[in-house]
Amino acid sequence: MVSKILLIVSLIFFALPGGKHQDDTIEVITKSIETANTKEISKYLNSSVILSILDDENVYSKTQSEMILRSFFVKYPPVQVKLKHTGSSPEGMQYAICSYRTSSSTYRLFFYMKQTGTNTLINELRVESDK
Image (cartoon, rainbow, N blue to C red; front, side):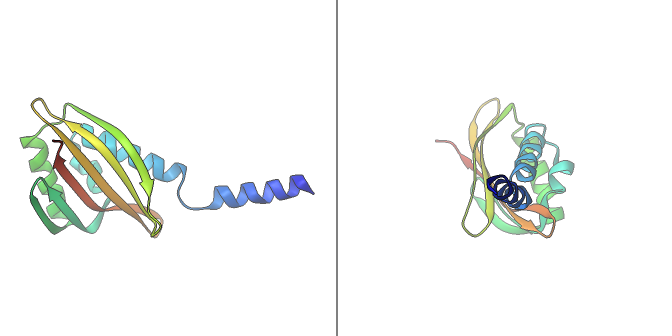
């Protein structure tokens, strides 16, 4: 009886959304940021994204967001990106906080994602000076 209960609990646990898939998505996005690969990042952008790059914040389309990120990476090429923290909110948003280092500065980079159908997509991406 106990083994049946453990089996059922295990199946429910592994069937829940999140977990490994979202960890993989965060890792792919983080690696894409580190290599400034905007094509790969754009695969994970929602149709509209809140972008806050330093002190410039607005809502952009997926295409506009990709261009703005490309421009940021050209102006501030990454030397090292380290994933510092991940988590989720009660509303189902997942987030990641990274340290983004260039040759001359360090920034905090945050991205917030939400499950949309079968995909986990970025709804918001922020870059702030790490003072």
